[in-house]
Image (cartoon, rainbow, N blue to C red; front, side, top):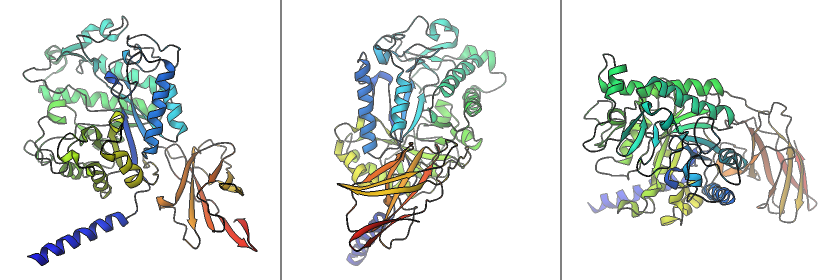
Length: 512
């Protein structure tokens, strides 16, 4: 018995060592949600000055970039309002405190956020809420030109919130028009919805859509009709987004349980109290199978070993239900410290590592930005020095337009105080080059650009690119290579290497 116990411990140690010995993925989405509704993440409160709003957002970006993130998911339409000048909807109350009131001094928050995000080489996913119109019917600020005042017949009040009635065809057309306008006018990388479709059920209350069901339901069962309504808007949006800009992604972050096994043989071995299919009327699997969406990011905000909704069970279930689209895992940073399981500082790092073992999982999104404040239980330290120590390119979506650039090439290198200054250029006249990846290898080391630990830096395209390698050690010989990336992170061929040779005590640079 003792031998078996010791053998088990030894095996565990070996497995842990093997896991740590494996290279981290070179491609992985690492994103954070930035919620604006009720000022959850940004701005920290209503009525901040323009400069304070800007500075807060820059602080969030810089912090999350240090944490290893390569994308942000920012809520730009929390309650049928706008964080940008919209021809259809009023300015959000979460900016100034009064719905319809523009920032003062005036600026376009969405334009500003996109520019700052792209400046750091990160993707900007614009997060919309499709149906929520008034967050709190008792106290929310409602402008005179808000759509609930202009088209009151489109809306239903449920549990002290106002929602569009998803059963009305004009509603679907209106929401599609609002989102298409943003895709057209702004350089966003993705359109993103979270888990709010039909609202979560309130105890003892039924969503009051009998009138539209009688009008539009035909011979369908009510549940099927509701699902068909949500299907219809997802399909409409999918077509509209790609018609405007084929490279803009469309992603959904659903509640973590599609259906429980006791309701559907295809469901997960869970006991979720409410589910996407049966309660929110969101048939996520259909949208994936039909190719209407590019990624899914289920919110798996439970710990490993949870009695009813175990993280590991759901992780494995979603890994088998991507249908060729990308699957990212939503992690609940806000849960840290909330119970015994979440007092384990290794919970989220372990969740990330487990997701990485599955080839059909392509990354993680974290809820939410404010939850990282103060580095609770060392989560930022664990990301920066552990699972996200090395940079990652974002995963490529093979079905989206590919504009792989030509390889750049080195033109000069100089030993300077404090490091090696490297210069290069490219002959890209197409404008496809958006970033460069600079790799460094030790003497006699094979060039292997699949190894992310060799990435020195991922840099923005510029007219006169250069990089100072401050970790360069005089007297050592290195080999550097470069690649170029398009906006969807398709990577060029590798450049000719920049090699170093020591001759008569002098460093020579060889551009092969």
